[in-house]
Image (cartoon, rainbow, N blue to C red; front, side, top):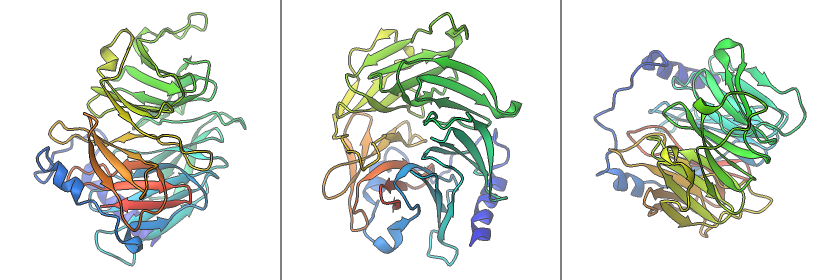
Length: 370
């Protein structure tokens, strides 16, 4: 089974070429005209094929391997386990769950590289590790050597990544220079829950317990400890913010707040000063309680003829995974016999040819809608 998992990822990496190669858009890609029919087709009706126990404890993070022909869904849990579920399009003897224990704290973020050959994972134990799929080993690429629950979301891509901390700072780490910290700034007096990089390469958004969503221009930061950085723009939320993520195009910034809102800010990276109101506001119950992981609404990593969509867990009954459009409309409420618990952490498979949604719950189970 392990060899099959490796073969799937190796085949995809070989076909992709170099990490910087340009991907061609398939003629079978979903368009804005076919998007709704693909959303309507998503199903979680069969518990035998749609749900699997992948980690022993509550799921804190989820990610999906970029191979368009196979589903390799990953989940990190509260105790530092990483569970990997490999599924073929048709039922196969190579299907199954692989369980690893690379960390001593909750796995807060998971990100595959473009080629699908390695997985970056960050943990509350203060370390970041890279999982080499072919060798089936984890390599520590960065660590604080501290027992504090310091490192949070969100990782970047390729050979570099951003980290935000419970102390309110943001770091940028470059693996090309043996994990050198190329940027380290305190941007908040409170814990930062997420940091998201804009496609332009110099704007970032931070959000957390300060109750403010802030957009920063890295070009204006001098690195001087005596000069406090100033945000490019900000939105006062009123309560803590679980996450803030730029959309694939960078035009929109999606926030999940404890004000029970999903907010969409447009062109926040071009704004200046106070953002008085979001472009779109969705009323959404985000109070998951102490036993469930918080909601963090996530974008699909691709656009469909310019259309952007995002997914979120839901407190609604029957249990539901919700997919929204940028105008705030609920495009699909996924329900079925296999979805019996709140899927707090959700993501999309990055494929542009078919829609696949992954949801992780607090029992360590992944539900796959396809």
